[in-house]
Image (cartoon, rainbow, N blue to C red; front, side, top):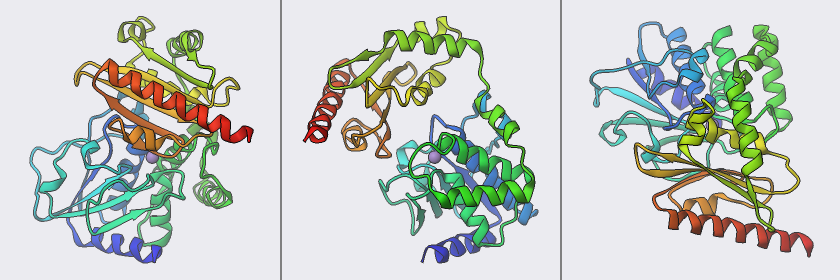
Length: 322
Ligand SMILES: [Mn+2]
């Protein structure tokens, strides 16, 4: 069944001469690497097609590759493939509803239907792992550069094979990929994890100012002025939530930053126990069981979210004590 869908996706790719690839707003390495890797693989396999990887570029992810710009879309005769995004409102750079032919490829829990061809594998650690399955089960070709990008998405979304779901299957798939293309893991890790001292200083600030409740919930609301005083940007501050795992004193932790342009609070939540995506979905968000995001408009709403997550931790601790 699953393999059939992958073959169907390959046949659709084969059919169309113009293909647009999109992913979520506020991209992470998996989102960008998946669109760049799939674009390059389609072009490598079918050199005469026109394939575009779209969305706002992020300077930090330049090492993954260049993104494309299109001035006008062909809504009728093109194929759109959405990557790493479960909800239409979070797609970057296009109005999906205008397009006739759409395919969804994702690893997030299902939120809403985009099209008749949807391939969602929640058992994979990243969209790049799903793409590796696509490549392994069809005639799509890859080279060393494309394999490197697939690995960038897999490593960063799984946080070096730390997060669930991470099992023997992914390790074997990755081992095969590394062997086949003689990939240099040290080099790949360096491109993903190298960072300026300003970010480490900001992490020090966060560590010192994080509030921790007696229910083991931790949170911080980061002022934009403070973030810029450390010479860091708001999106990397928000992503630092991933660097605060395995701290004994809390089981759920939340970083809040202000999105000035859209006048909202951007919330990033992680958990080592309680399932958080249900709470996040009540606050204009969602995501994985232990890794979610939300967007709230007012300070009152934010207070409610803090309260809900604190209660979630309290109930979780009670269940564990039983
Ligand atoms: Mn992802």
